[in-house]
Image (tube, rainbow, N blue to C red; front, top):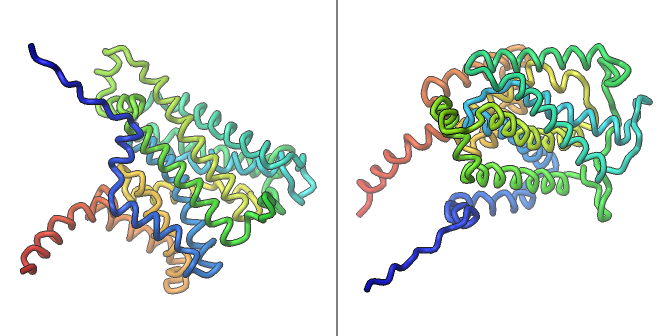
Length: 342
């Protein structure tokens, strides 16, 4: 008689924690200690701003990297959350500004962003490839012109100004250090949620839908419904980023959700790496640094050309972005270190 020893199954949380390596730990420590060496400018204009755009690009990465759905409407979803904060919260534009407390406004804004994203998914989920890109770009463009021309709800071209971050626990959360840690905390939650989703049954099914939707449909999966739910989850992440973005700028207008901003989200995701959750944050940091410093070198008129050339170089050298390039270089660096060792 033999006794069968059953190996305990690891939960998804255990698997997630097991995948965290020394690199992630060092990065977390560096991000936590960053305010100790950074000025107020670098805390907000570089650190906080990069984290915000990284979250918007992360919502795109979740759709495109795991689901094969390239949406150019993520900045639209984030901007809609920002408009909700301006409308239901406080502003000094003398339009709406109902003055509701932030702990009521923020959940409403994020939920509206999730519903809007799900509606976009319901429209575009039955398409693939270039058709998904074109439909979501058309939605983003239509929303841009609608907010620009609608004064009754969105106050048209001027938008809303005087939007303040909340005062809570005796802290004004738009001050440089609190705002940086707020952005970092929300970004970590969004990053962990995407990692957890990727390792869950839902995420594994989503990746299978990306690779072979016909087979998954034959197995009984509701492909369109699965995609719409993914859009909803991605919209929640974009909505959180939209709330932080409107607190960062103190205002929101149609220019916030323009076509150029929609393209920038795609550029950020591709530069960092569309298949890696950390990639959008890396791409956002690169683009924000270039926007902050390179524009003074090449000028505002040539800056978009510089971004375009950098984007093309990354695509040609490494279609998987900077992280894919690092993955290619790592074995060569390891071989060189072994050769130079004792």
